[in-house]
Length: 316
Image (cartoon, rainbow, N blue to C red):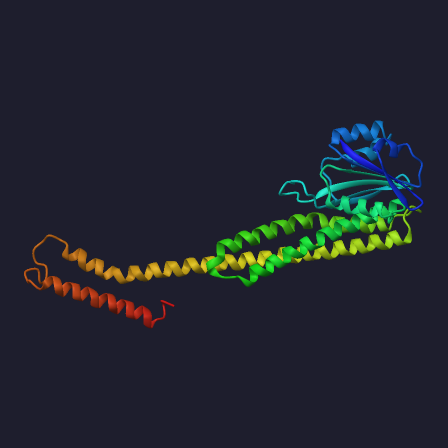
């Protein structure tokens, strides 16, 4: 288990060990843990002396963004990007936060990129209370996700501009990847918006008016990203259908060419098969120029059939 703590008093933040942070009575204390569920459960129960109904959501295996009022504080679960390897079906790591007046405990399993940004704000003296800290997490997560979602839209724009039958396979691969990522982000952005909105409306004096305004702004940004990934998902579906139609048209064109070639050679095959029989009575079988005549007849028939297809514009 790894982690750190911060003691914040009179606008100054000092980084301390986790144990030292628990034992102080400063105006604001932040304890952050990066650990597995088993280690976190024992530490939160034994060292931090938290009740089970707070330890359980902080260490839950499966999490989704939510906000619940607990005692005189709140439990908040948010999702953000991580620089560690994640499951392809779960592309965002979680941070579980329990906050009361004067104290915040956050728990992660994977290192969250937003944690570094929040820590910088703490050391710069921008965080004075739990509301500021949660607001910093919400703002850092949304700011980190915003360019990623925008990049998905740009990639889909590039695919739409390159729409061509010659690039069907490459484009389908790229569109499928963009669609899968958009669906994964959409799973968490909508509940994250709802969690931030609920947090901004929670009663309590540990959330100031400025905190609520910043949380509402973060919720609005999450809502905008959720709408954008929904639009990306729908556009990717339409793009996938267009690529499927292009592929079907490509197969139809190839099938048409094969059919035309078969129609050209069908009468020729009949003639050559007929004269390939080893029987008496075949027309011109005794003439020395018969081979040349049959070859010329085949050429004329092939040219006539091909000319008919050209006149009917079947070769376009």
